[in-house]
Image (cartoon, rainbow, N blue to C red; front, side, top):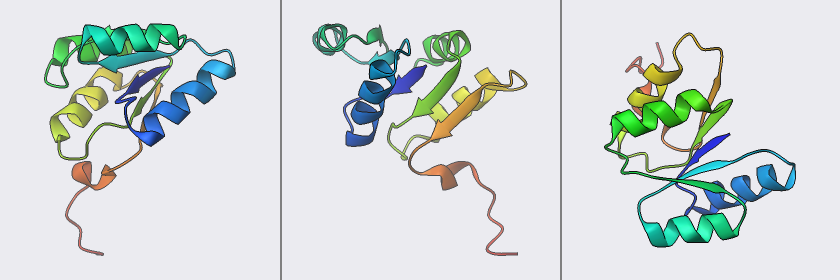
Length: 108
């Protein structure tokens, strides 16, 4: 299970619940300091920026499912994850800002 942005209340609590249910959890972080904190909580850290599409793609492809709890202000992250998981049959859960990848149907 790959989780992005474990610093949010949603990301952190979901990561702990998954870990406590015996799932192997990968967590994306931006620094060595945060990586050490995740390791101490039983979560495997992957250090990267949300702009690093190569690492995001590789991490998403090695996970059974992806939960994106990162900022809704960055549609590039969602586009990278959607592309990485396309036709894989793997689940992508977008916890916030899901409308950034929706069409502009305006209720029609």
